[in-house]
Length: 358
Image (tube, rainbow, N blue to C red):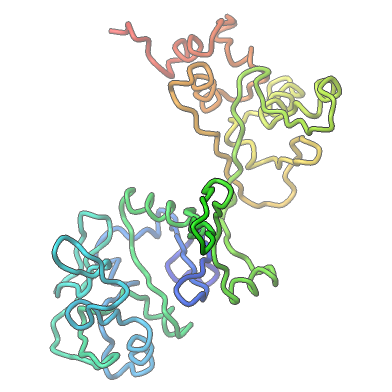
């Protein structure tokens, strides 16, 4: 991001996981600003390569041969860990070896088909002769800089981006197991059921030294959406319900304080609910919004609401379109008329249409 290897970065998220031999493995998803987005195969070729470098670039060639050659698998090594059973035959889950291709083209799954020319060159990797069909896509600059395995791909469709976000947030691999005795005693599976995961020494050290496991830029703040007096209030076992209800701080939420901030100004502050955290920060200890001091971008995301939830869904629509709202009643007021439901207010504002609309 600092050296702008791919251009100006609009958003970035990464997560570190520990796989195979327990070594750290980071997954990055980088979203570029509109003017730097890669929009055609010619742009892809500027940043991603899937061929063995020529002899003239001996340093990069050594790195690629050491880190960016897949396998061998398939018929060269049917016992490889990437082999999966598909019907009556085994095949590589990563679809190696790839087909030769003279030019980079777009594919249907959102990932480009990178240029892999049939040059006739073969190199011996792990006792097998491999050519350009086995090269993992990489960025020449990053590979030369870090001298390690850095797989770089271009994803150009919403489907691919959704998959990457899902992969980033999938969490740790876990197993379910139970402990049984060696004799023939009756086993109580409920009491003996265990759920856990193995932590490698490398991951344990990583956590002991408090190294980062993930990062998101810019940060995203989830914003609560609730109906009047329907916010969640946490009550501890030792607390008396009457004391909790009488404490106004316990019932404060991001939404109620958003209304309060707008009410303090005659014309309101002029922001949508989702834009508010770009100018104010939410302090969880005091449960109040505070003027943002540092010029750091933060994105607000309203909690997802299903249409089947009725009034809460229509409330969310109003919060997405109405600026400087001062209360729930203010949201339901259109042209100085207070409507009984959020749905009717949405219809009068033209956000949604009535079922009977022609």
